[in-house]
Length: 130
Image (cartoon, rainbow, N blue to C red; front, side, top):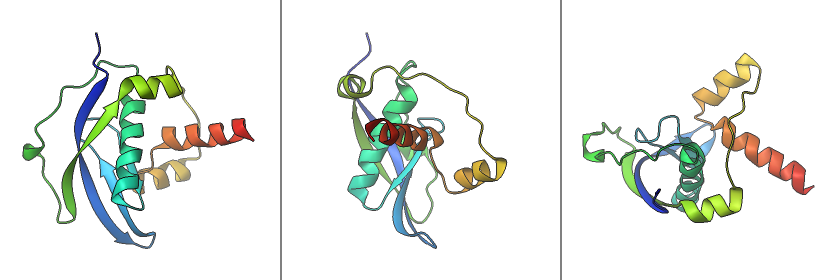
């Protein structure tokens, strides 16, 4: 049986660039998980959603030891609690879809650490609610 409450370490990167000041979040523990927020609190909330989205239909990854991760000068470790029962009740089962986007836009998303699945889901929800 899958656990309902999970706790994963993430790397939070404080960023100051042409986009302004924000916090990027990634985790070697959750392959491909990248998100951000204007504040640490917003970044952690987005990380919870991103982690749940990435692992909802998979065997939950074992928690890695973050002391073995290499951190940059603006990086620090935080732990994110993910309530999978609550998340699944809100969003239900996720499905994998292949989408086509222009290559330049894809490259931009990668460079800016944009979670395309999360952006697509948000856009579709907004359209559904309109």
